[in-house]
Image (cartoon, rainbow, N blue to C red):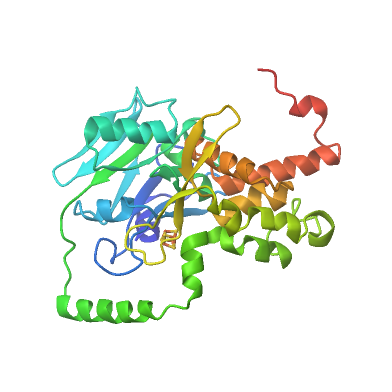
Length: 343
Ligand code: SF4
């Protein structure tokens, strides 16, 4: 739906960060129904990072909340004169002033919108990265679920669009209810027969595959130049595998309509003594900041993930940029002067 709409409505050669660019938040036909695994949504646009097609898929609870407003998707074009956020409910579609939200991180933004416009609202917001048009800016929902890829946070920033907030209560109409229920019941039966390993997936989440992927060199090591046995052997990778995060898990959760339930909220105390509640990093984040930057300290990874989510950065792109910069420094392409920041 997103591809078709953009293809038909956006002229070739449009600047992804210009007013003619279109950004869409779209669901699929099953989202909002009782079908298993159909709780996600996709953000679509022309990518400012690649200049090509850009899409980014995200879990959480935004997808069904949008679908239940009665809309399959929403597409935004133009540029607001001042910062705004888009509010969509059963009753209304309106742009609201977001001047007081500009400069705030994604977590603060979500909380403020829920406080002022409705605690039920599901919010997808940009942070400072999107506001400043970083081409690796993502869109963050529910404090830690990310439409991270393709730089689409910058497209929102270029439109002065700080967030999209949705909440609907309508039933999604089904053409053949009886047939649909039959298929859903069949799916449920199949899901009862999932292999035992699925319980590990629920407990450990995507970090479960990290050490295996490092050991088969499927995960990047030192900007893809490092060798597994020499610089990042299994003993190091194991410090960031699924078990490494278990001691921090406060509660487990899943995205809407998902049986796999692989998310977790973590609690840890930072170096300043502050207790931080945050989401468990996903496998890709751990690989980008871990093996790719030769880091094996679990709290460093948790912190990096938390900062990226708050500022609205794509964790994968940030880790990869850092690894690239590290190699440039090693080769003398970047010098001490280039990497010194005075605050
Ligand atoms: S809970 Fe895990 S498996 Fe399920 S939709 Fe969310 S990220 Fe995907």
